[in-house]
Length: 107
Image (tube, rainbow, N blue to C red; front, side):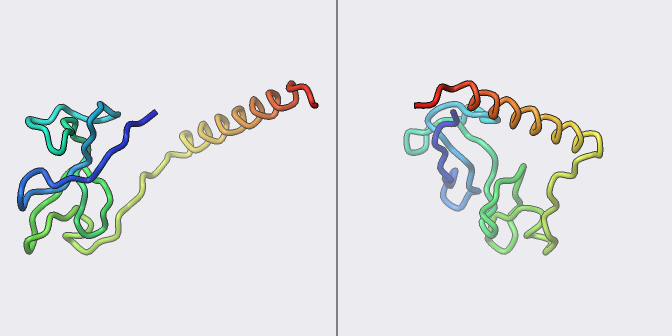
């Protein structure tokens, strides 16, 4: 279970980051508490509001590379092998779910 995260400005005029009171995947301990939250995650772009690995200050706004350069964001590309493996995992999960439903007694 992931704890609740909130997008918070790290200092007045500074970049926004995902913050949480509890540790979560990819978070790091932050140097100080902000609104009782001390675990920082990824940066948040002020324009598209999506998380990213880093932001840069352009015209007074903290932007991801895609927004700063005006280019569309690229999604993660899967190799054909990764795509096949993901499909196989989904098939196994569907089969396991169906088997579990079939094994339940009917009322």
